[in-house]
Image (tube, rainbow, N blue to C red):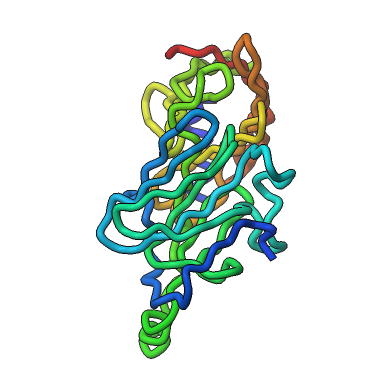
Length: 260
């Protein structure tokens, strides 16, 4: 059964954290600042730069030399990111001695703790409004919780240690598809349609979630999950079974070969 058919059927039915405080935190608008922040490697460090005209904060995690904490080792219940700091307009922030990493960013500032952001086990996140912005929202009619946004993996990582790029996927059912990884997410292409997704890397292990549309991804609706392992020959892993609307899709073994 083609991936597209299965997907449509499925979807129809104390941070030990370097949490930094720059003093009293002003009202936060509760908006992602991923478009404001760029990340660039400088030898063993990563430099985050605020390219916008207002204050932002960045949270990050990864393989760091000076701490044993990794992505997922943050506070209970809000545990993906372990470090954070504020960045003034036009300024930058250095994360020292870090290899593979993930980061997220919001407008406003962050204090000690993580009240200004809510993250999920897959690294997706929602920026939380605070101060006068939060008080204003409380006077209005109830609104949905801000949708989770995709965080970014390390841009420009080496091909040997990162899945960044496009891969040919062959399933044990004989299907041939393409899976592309970029700093902003993943795309699964079955030849007829392209499906958005998120991914998270822990060492050589990559977890992927694929959704029918951007709207499904923003609402964090259950998607198709893959677990992959990267080595010198490529990637291999599984697409987990799922069922909906009377259609059952069995677990599939996946073999991936890099195209670029």
